Image 1 (cartoon, rainbow, N blue to C red):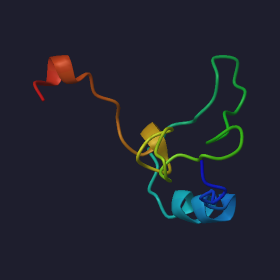
Image 2: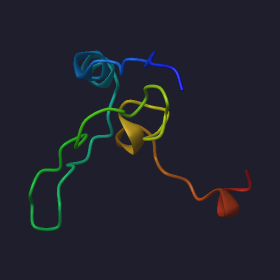
Image 3: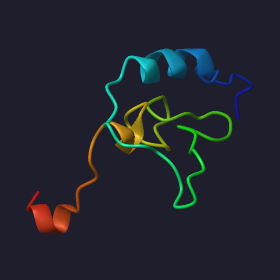
Length: 73
């Protein structure tokens, strides 16, 4: 195994991409009214390699989730 490790992208890079994304105009909060942060935890972040947390920085805050079996894709 190689000692070379790929550095995770910085959270500031993710934040810049997230801020540039147009979000849906709905409040992101729990049923109790507690605000939900856009991301929890450390790297890897959404929209960044290795894409284990999705392809887009904003996830489904910017795009609606579709059930492909019903949409016919």
